[in-house]
Every structure is written in structure tokens, then in C-alpha cells.
Amino acid sequence: MIIDAHMHADTRPIENFKDIKMAGVDAVVTCAHDPLEMKKSNVTLEHLNRVVYQEPKRISKHNVKVYAAVGIHPRAIPDDYENVLKELPNYMKEDHVIAVGEIGLNSTAQIEQEVFIKQLQYADENNYNIIVHTPRTDKPTVTKRTIELMDEYINPKQVQLDHIDYSIVDMVIDKEYTLGITVQPEKMSVDDTVKMLDEYGFDKFVLDSDMSSAPSNHMSLPETKHSLEVNGFNKNDIDKVIYKNLVKFHNLKI
Ligand SMILES: [Zn+2]
Image (cartoon, helix red, strand yellow):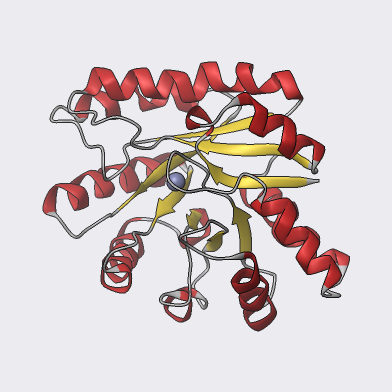
């Protein structure tokens, strides 16, 4: 059993799901993101409809279970974003919608902070988990601000902070967050991931491919599992990062 903790199914061909299922991936969490410019809320809502209603059906063809996360991505904030916030409860009541995400900051721009705070407040009021982006550019600075806002607005036990790499791991390892390592060509390699887990332990981490239209490796989680196995890590530790920590965090019924 492997569960991919963060990906964007809507950007990937169905063949990828056949491959990953054959390699042991039984479930994925597909997150709302920025596949279009999304200048107006109706475009965002069409995207959320696809994430929540169409993708699970499409991908079940290969017996891969799809969980979803919905929200406003910091790179795709529509002018009338309030309309999206108003609709979030309709998506969140679906059983397979397990978190608000992906949300967060891509920069420290005021509008991004405003929309992030509103989504933190919404998740906090309703006890929802959140899946939080950290950017490629100015990563430590933007992550620091992201943490400040989360400290103020949400219980850290509800947070999956994602795209952890060596530039921010020391800043977050002592927090009560669930930490996502993205095994992707321009983020963490399989070898870096194995090294980080060896150094920082297996208890706090989940793994994801974040596969999207950006350079991605849809087989990165089976490859990481294989590498951990051939490097002699114990099965219980491997299981923690490839599915058990995620099942516990989201309280998934599998
Ligand atoms: Zn993502």
C-alpha cells in the first residue's frame, strides 16, 4: 500500500494511474491548484468541480481511490475570491474531500496573505485539515511568514506543510505539523528523500509526487519505497511515510 499525499490528477493522463496502481499506489490525494489563470471565481469553481466530482470517477477506472482537497491556491486568486470561499462548504461535505488545500503563500504579497488567513480561519472554525504549499522562490522567508500566520490562526495538528527540503526542514521539524516531502525532479530526489528520512526520522513525514504539468515523475513514490527497502530500512518505518502517517493524519477509512 502506498498513498500519494499531494498531487494534481487533473493534469495527468489516465495511463499514469495504471502505472502507479501496478506499482502499489492504492490511493492519492488530489489538490486544487492553478491549472489556469483563474481571474474569476467561476473558473476556480469549474476547476473544483473537476477535482471533486470528475477526477475520482475518471481515475477509479484503474482502482485508484481519490481523496480531494479544495481551496484557493496562492498563484490563482480570482478578483472575486469571496465567491469561492462561499462555495467551499458544499465541497467539504463530500466524504472523500478530506482537507482545505492546497493553500498557503507563494510570496509574501498582501492579497496572498489575506486569502490564506481567510482559509485558515475557515479550516480552524470547522476543524478541517489543511494542505499547505511552500514556494520554490524565497522559500525560507516565505515559509517563515507562513508559519507565523499558522501559529496565529490554526492548531498545528491540522497542518500538512508541504514541499519540505533542506532549506526549511530545521525550521519546521520541531513543530506539530505533518511534513510532506515532494519527490519530484525539481524538488527532492529519491536519494535526498532517503537521506532526509534517515537523518530526521520517519514519524513526522508523508511522501508525495505533486505530479502536475510541471516536471514530474509519476513513479517517484514506488521508486522511493524501493530505495528505502534496498537500503535496509525497516518495514514499519517505510510504511509510516508511504501511508500510515497520512491515514492517521486524515483519519482515512481504508
Ligand atoms: Zn501541488
